[in-house]
Image (cartoon, rainbow over all chains, first blue to last red; front, side):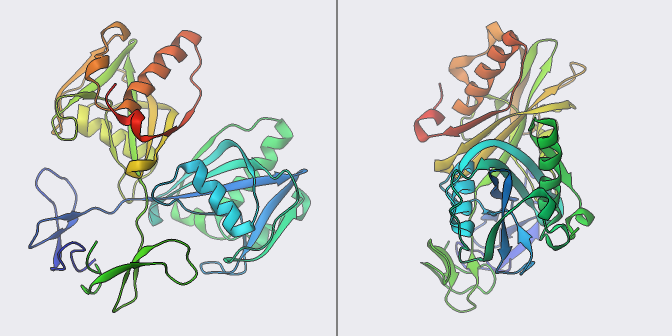
Length: 182
Length: 182
């Protein structure tokens, strides 16, 4: 950030009065421009024991497999964001079950929240940001070609929980090294 | 938003290529400036059956009571944000228990996440943004003087759950009218 988005003047990084950390503040109009973590919402959607994965058509991790998920938008709820992302990336209309994983990913200022969901009929397709969408049995999950470690972790938790027959909320703090492809 | 925070040129609102909603984009350098919901993290902290509330020293709702909570910052986890806000607003060091409420508050682009927490010793005080911090028995909660309906809702859920002896995660979609003071 170099300029004030309100008045166009130069901003500088300083600790505002009554605050305790540096913020970008405008030297002319005085506005403070806060920067905060963003939410990624998505679905681990299942059709007859198979999980819906998408192969990414965009960077980062173009060509790798992921769960349908993306940035929550202003004006929507967390549930709406997860449904919209699944529709956009996999052209799939799913039924949300429970919230399943919450991952704080500190080093990139993101909180990822994935829902368990049911895909009632096997209707899906590659959305604009997807090369290919496909249902995978557990034995066929492309573990070595997954896009993000949070996705790998969510899938591992899911298959373990499925064997136990219970799907509690998993709340994870992710450090940098865990975010590499598995 | 009027100006590009990167190059200082005028921005305009338009739907970028490959996108499906209007964004602020720079007419000169082409950068898109996304705006997304922010996370409020906080605690419903309990000491010997009494709940820790803070009377707000700042707008909005100056003078009204709330749970310690505030904007999650870049570089921290959800748990760290909840602990920090409780320390800043109530000078209280609490032990987090479970994540208790997640409220999507669409019309102000916020997702509020409150943890149940234990305050092991009755050590607390008013932080800089707080006029007064106090422990309340259920019978003494100042229902008519609470700051936000999400806080009122969380307290109602808590006392009901306490009678049942179980504290599940509550996931709420909050519409505008529910955010008024009770």
